[in-house]
Amino acid sequence: MSNYDRWLMVPALIIPAVASAPAYAVQYMNVEQAQKVLFPAAEGFEARTIQLTAEQKSAIEASSGVRVRVAEIKAWRAIQGGKPSGWFLLDEVYGKHEFITYAVALGMDGAVKGVEILDYRETHGSEVNNAKWRAQFTGKKAGDTLKLDEDIKNISGATLSCKHLTDGVKRLLATYATVLK
Amino acid sequence: MTLAGSQHSASPELVECVRARPLLGTFVEIAAHGENADAVQMAISAAFAEVERVHQLMSYQLADSDISRINRDGFVSPVAVAPATWAVLAAAEKFSAASDGLFDITVAPTLTKLGFLPRHAGFPRISGQGNWQHVALLPDHQVQLKRRLRIDVSGIAKGYAVDRAIAVLQAAGMASGRVNAGGDLRVFGEHAQIVHVRHPAVPEQMLPIVELKQGAAATSAGYYTQRRYQGRMVTPLINPHTRSAAGVQRSVTVLANDCMTADALTKVVHADPERAVALLGQFEARAVMLVPDVATGGCRVFDTSRLNPASWQTRVIS
Image 1 (cartoon, rainbow over the protein chains, first blue to last red):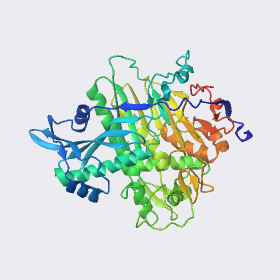
Image 2 (cartoon, rainbow over the protein chains, first blue to last red):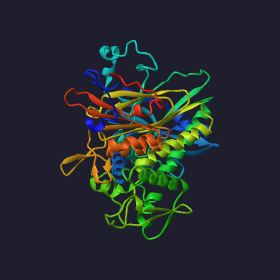
Image 3 (cartoon, rainbow over the protein chains, first blue to last red):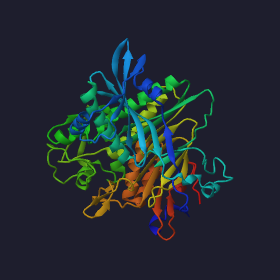
Image 4 (cartoon, each protein chain N blue to C red):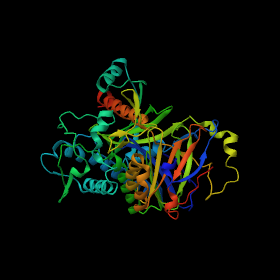
């Protein structure tokens, strides 16, 4: 590798096969927190769970181009000044391996006011709990080593999750137009 | 890129909130520490609004962004853009000039050909000639194309958006903060972050490479963005001189004071690691490059820290 002789080459790092990627799961917020963030001025939320009929399902699929996997729509009407001020919709889409829970806020005109991720889960790599993997870090101190027990933020390479989420929002907008408007 | 966060609250009276939204074609995660939860949430909301503004102005995908307006009309007449867009284009010009064109926002047609950027119906045809030197930045935030080019600032605008979001958190009085836009990261305050980078050949394995106390880190690698084009795997990392895509199996992380610089320089390192070394020094940046070692299954780690060892604290594990 003389091409890179002006680069400092440090010893190769080899991680044994048992030590896969650390599991990553994060709860960003719960439903109440998301409602507050997306509708800060609302004084209350009325739950309006809706069961889609077969006809409604196909209508939503036809207009959004996205498959409707779940017939139950978890919706809340935000109330502000005694009047409805918008919709709060809770939904799940597939990430890379696991579901992402997210919320979409719609204004009274049906336009998206905001999207928040509530839960992001990634089950791959639970091998991090493997004792051998953890033992590698025994005795290491902050400043010159790793702080393993702290959680791992892993939201990169999320192109696929992002695509699924975009489809999910598209489906919810069609759902709004079909059954909530 | 991935990172581990110090989740201990350094000062018990501070509240931390973390949120994520889909923006910039990835998930953008923003965290901040502040005095009370409402203030922190408001600061994070404002930071997201800033990222969204950058997205609306500079997206290649959106047909009415500043970038799309330049691509549609910029050859015929000057296009007035937002000061933010103009600032990003000026920065792009600076990086192009400093790198002798190894950073170049005019590789967009190559990205479209390889399937990384959409084809816009109704956009004028390109000539296939010209480069960054033919993007003219005129007074009053006007931009004109001197050749029939198409530009894409996604190699730099994500870093800019991260920098803007950090500025919003700081202006809102947050004690510390972190913005991570799928591989582009910047932090401030007391909470050091361990930056993990994926093993380029085994991306489900994460390697902790450096502790970031302040400043930015941007990682770019092909493992999750690669796609098949005419039977071979290609990445959206284009060498502007040859217009060919970088190989899949190399990961580049650049550490710099701001995220836009880190973001731009990852492209230069991918295009030509040897020539990048001098440039990194010029921008007070440092690069860590991981190249898989087939013989051992591990990684060779190339690090330019020797050139400015005082800038960053490293802990490469062996």
